[in-house]
Image (cartoon, rainbow over all chains, first blue to last red; front, side, top):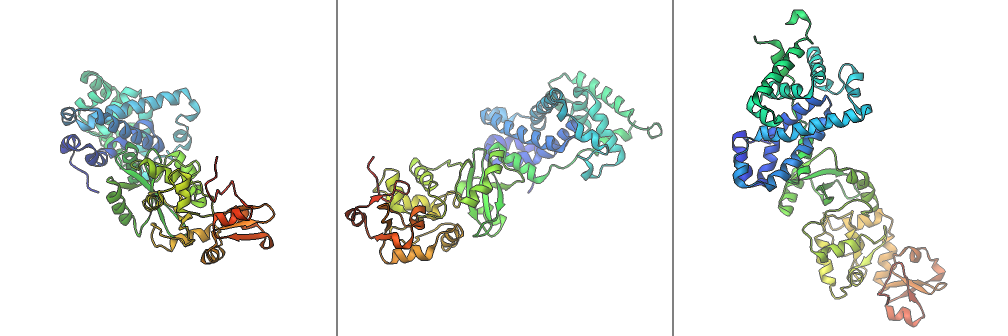
Length: 184
Length: 260
């Protein structure tokens, strides 16, 4: 399946939501999946978040005017939904500690991500990401794993750009500590 | 400072699993998801929305199914790895027994009449058959026998909604819409109906059978009728034939309309 160009998607969605929606999902799903996976550290959770995100996106788009859809910055807007869902997922894990990051931690080598053949440092990095406070983790993932603009990140997390930049700066600094000294 | 950290972070980006992306599209309602299941008549393609199973089809290939589905329903169907839980839990049993049971069905787009026909059809027990006219009478539209036939011809969920159990009143099996017409026979035999016996009765013009111990008459495939021992089995050509001999209709298979 071909993935439509991100730039034309808002227009396509505004013209014919049902027809354009599958293309919109295909064009943005890798990002939503990757980001959720890195924020949550679990593939099953990432798949859930992806499904829930698009179910909500579809419902929301049905209620939007054509003009509003046309003006959407699609990636950032989709992430406003996904980031909220990731944050909620972490909160509900915190309430039910038995379903926390055990799967990831106990496996040690990162059973959830091993099939992607991550290098040792990438596994370490994933673990270090999971140790960051959520706003830093989410901002670092969106900016540096997904390559979203600061502006998109700011919209998605509903935080001022300055705050986002500071979060990213602090987050990166903490991640550097995960590297052995000679590597930096 | 470019740095190794930034480069490593970029490499944490990955690809979403195709089937999960399909499931996300299906969950939004912009497309149906589908899975395949084996059956006595070949591989069944089972499509569903968030509300329930929307279609069952036979097809030669996934492409073939996707094309047929899109033409028929006006929306795409995409292969997925997982179904909504209620469907996952009840689908295999529904296919095996030819009964929806607790499997949720999505009759979206069907008229109230079509739905009534399908819901009544779903009540026919496994391994039994009923005439088109029986459905018409049971749903309170005794004159609509032809309309029942065309509603069943358009049954979007065959096998699970067992339209193969609805036959002509002369005992011939009649048409079937899922693949080859002989599939009706295959499905009925697979669920244990003794077609030889059933058809030989029909050929001799026998519409009902009864038991001389209970004085009850039934549709010939009704469970109690089938189990009646040969020396007690009596045969009738019509309702009046049975009534004249002092028989009353079975309350389970309701071979004729029973006054309330």
